Image 1 (cartoon, rainbow, N blue to C red):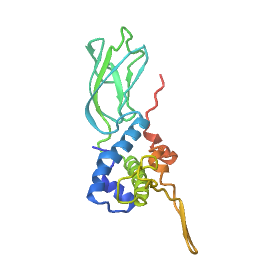
Image 2: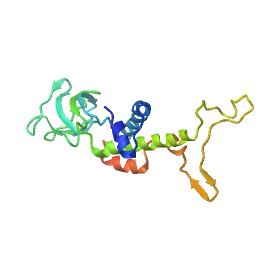
Image 3: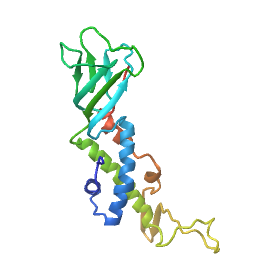
Length: 216
């Protein structure tokens, strides 16, 4: 499941894309933005029923899980022993925040490397609207900028000036402005969005509340 759908992109852009373009949006544009958002956030925000993570105890009190929110803890093992959850047991889970705390004054064991294993389910079962909206908006920018550039090209294979051996110029066009009599039009740079970053500063600001930042 992706972070947004073609329908979300069409709702943002208020355009009805034809089926061939919808396929490209689904198979090319959405996965690219989807990946960019997950890389920025630092984890896969989609719900996963079984996630396994291993840790070095390093005598710390907190273990920060990678995926939030944590839906449930399946098991926690330390040095081969299965731990139990509870204030009067071995550890206390903070599911929404995504970390486990060792109870009492004890710390996680550092007897050996990768000695703690946590199996849990986590991620958003219902994707936050902010993430879906941001994904759809970023896809819409890329698609519509590509369409702007595409609309200026002839219905033929694109050739560069260098590769055309017929003595003609290349047939690739990127018009920034044009004038007809008293009418003058200026266009946005169609090369900017497709070749620029998938996420704008505004997108990053919107996503920041969901980003994982760890302090050891």
